[in-house]
Amino acid sequence: MARRARRDAGQVLPFAAVFLALGLAIVVVLGTVGSMLVDAAEARTAADAAALAGARYGRPAAEQVARRNGAELVAFATHRDDTVVTVRIGRAEATARARRTEVTPPRAPERG
Image (cartoon, rainbow, N blue to C red; front, side, top):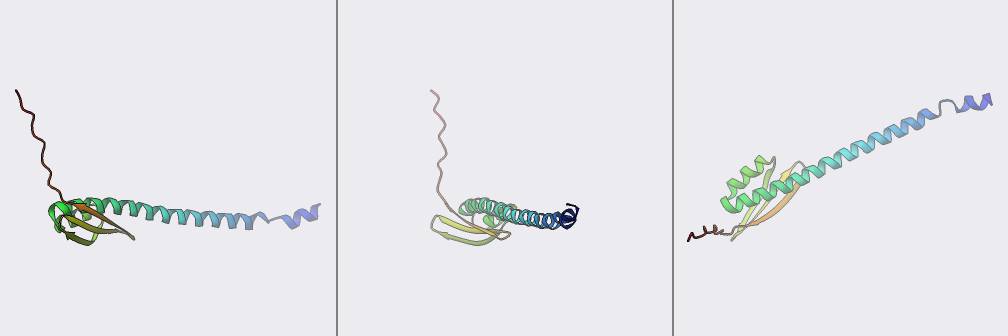
């Protein structure tokens, strides 16, 4: 019995090292994927805001809004009342479209 115990001694160390390395790799992958997902969500938000600003006030406003949202304006195009912008945050790009429409303010109720 003592002989068998000596041969088995130290066998846990290689398994522990493998599991530790595997756990570290999973943490790194999850961190990278999480970062990419956050960048994609922020890029969509920045693209929406830049498209709305661009539809109303033009390219300079779209660039400013994109910058304020931490994005770079990659593309800006208008066709009639439609504005399409593409922004980049990190490795994520997002495109959004907005249409300029005239909004009639509501009339005040008449007092009688």
